[in-house]
Length: 340
Image (cartoon, rainbow, N blue to C red; front, side, top):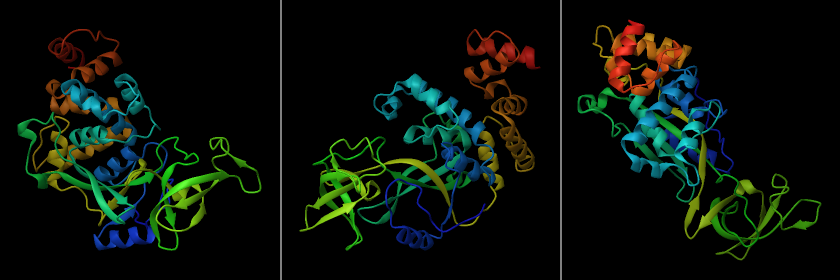
């Protein structure tokens, strides 16, 4: 994994120099992941193996765990974005190349991967790095799995701030605007939007990439002209943003410890010891490089039928063109007969 100076991948202007200084103070370095809609799963792959190559399989594992979380605790559906049904949410989550945000997928990732995750943002108004999500245990974690926290693989992730999806300020919108003279975000009101060398327009959606905005500063006798990247949505004193790209933050790449490996394996239902955890861990990595089905076969072989959920048993049976009907006990018997 190669560390580089901090670089913003969001749609909003950020003070990169300040972020870099604060990362250095915390002894963390910036390691980006490819921005292709799979970045969350790429950083999870980085956390486990030091590379991004297992992201597609990890996405499928997290999707199934999220489905199980929603089934066991319906209240978690409150974490699904407004206007998106549970079925559509899970379909989007399973789709390679579709970005994710929110708390629920992070919870599922920590649970299925055995990761102690901390997600950081740069809070623009206070100009400070802050943690927004910290996950180690999920509601599904068995008491036997709730081992000492130092057994969990710790990983820090940076969430780049972006404009809320499809947000473009209209005239008279209240916003925060980046004011170069004070190098800070100031309250403002949009007076007009225009295209350089063109007439003013009130239809800001038509030429949004070319638009510039005249903004009156609320607390200063000044009007500034800026592009959208220098604006933030505002309600009162609250700054609204959305996050759609994630990068890793590392001090120095250190492979998982043996205790980490034992914990990570236990999260997929495979018991191991200090003596055999490394070989099993490497086998799990190889399976994740191949496919989700390869992971299921690994778990079946080394964890047994009890390690698999009903949905996972059905996937194995469907691969072999066998019936997927029945309760979990019936499916386990069928898998035992078919898979040996």
